[in-house]
Length: 150
Ligand code: DQA
Image (tube, rainbow, N blue to C red; front, top):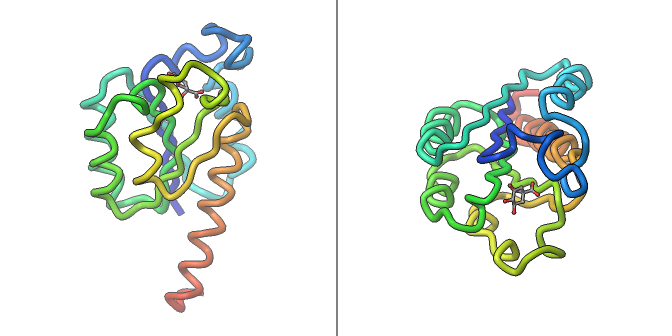
């Protein structure tokens, strides 16, 4: 089973960036914990500050992996192109936001991605990634059962 985590702009700065909002941990450190916990699955991580790179990754992985966890950062609130890419691929995509975007500035309240993602986890800190992966693993198991592969 393959699951891809995609982080968008500025999320490479986790741990240094506004720690009062996003916490003190770098994503690389957190990823080590995730990888150890989900050692039975193939977990891939991709981060880019460039919209086109995120689009290319969604196109390339979206027909291959069993699920995608996507935190598109600020592009969530601006990018119709990313929403179209999510709609174009068969892999289920869970939208994650570390902070509770609904409790912040009004421009963060709208997500272009939410309608095309399978679901969203918002405001639960880094744990949102863990929960999203857990759900994707459960979903993939359920799909395999339905398809008679288990
Ligand atoms: C974020 C929320 C966005 O509004 C913001 O632009 C980010 C991070 C979050 O994880 O809380 O970069 O996606």
